[in-house]
Image (tube, rainbow, N blue to C red; front, top):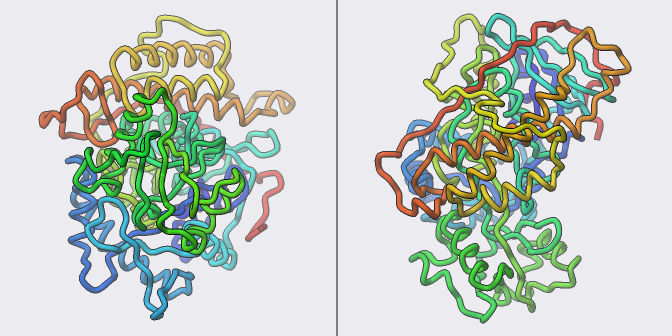
Length: 539
């Protein structure tokens, strides 16, 4: 049996492919539709139009990645991606068309030609996700909703199952292979476009089990989210359609920052906005989309509705915007078929780090990555594990309490984690702030060491009623500590990693960074039924 963790596009794609040959259990911590995929507005990039090519798409992806992309991963993304999109079109996915009946393809930041497909205007992720959920509803997949991954089970160096929590009870599920498709960790930051489920559970579980993580210092901040509670994302496509950025005095500042102005790579736009905000006392900048006038609501209905909730009319009003945490380029390191450094464990989507994004993800490549590498991971997982080559990468080995100098008896709140990450491990970083954050995370990690919430099979049933909120805090603290350490180690500015004390790019640091924990092993994998398990689509 193949167990898949996560129901975003990578998980749904893997489930669809794997179910053709294997029994599949799909596990998601909330409802099946609750994922970052549902919130993806910008569209999906694919080189399928006349005049475009996978080579052009690859060149744009490599340029955005600032020298750290794996060229072979990029080739696979752009070549396989075009095929995956054609399959979605053939399956009836409702992509938008122009007045001539041709597929609409938009221009977005750092793309050399229009190649970004949309569905429902700015509801592309939700539309693709709905189509995929309908597809897998008839594949005989066992679906476990409201089921939380607490840990991986490792026996003799191989992942043989997962420990999950449902209705407060921890249970073990055995598996021939486990595919992590659990998304990113956007909830690390106080300003984030990510939903509340994005707490890095899969990456943290892989870390505890001893898997190699890579490129952890690179966290992408979307340049434009509404500067209102909830930080609704304002898609790159709005700027692609002609909207411009203004400071509080009405000056268009991006033309002085980059030749592509508002269509510069995301890291450039986000850092420039943050710098302008600092000069004006932290107040937001403005996005001027008034030139789009009445067309805005037709082109971007979801964004228009979000603006209306704050009594803003994008056709008439300037929109206050701020950068927000958006996408983690780091994650569980994999090869080109989703294999991690732990036999039996695969990863795809934002939880994984294939090297395809390098130091900065090209706009609208995330849904494509989920399709391409979710498919490849499922194909690899269904083959005989014994016949596979499992990659090993040299890595810096650290433990959760390495060099601990102080211990806290109280775990942090979510707001405390978000505040320190935003202020000290955010868009602009320096050694003083990073060391301050490192010390705070060491203390918090110590609180979990002092009052462990890990449970074994001998624990009483009553004691096994576990708060998943506590486990999410543990996961965020774990990943916050790793990201902070990685940011300290990279003494240059590259892509989404900006050091005020090392503002230049260093050619000698044009390499990926790997980290590995000293693992523990859970060896009690037995095929127990899960409470309230059910089959099929419960939407």
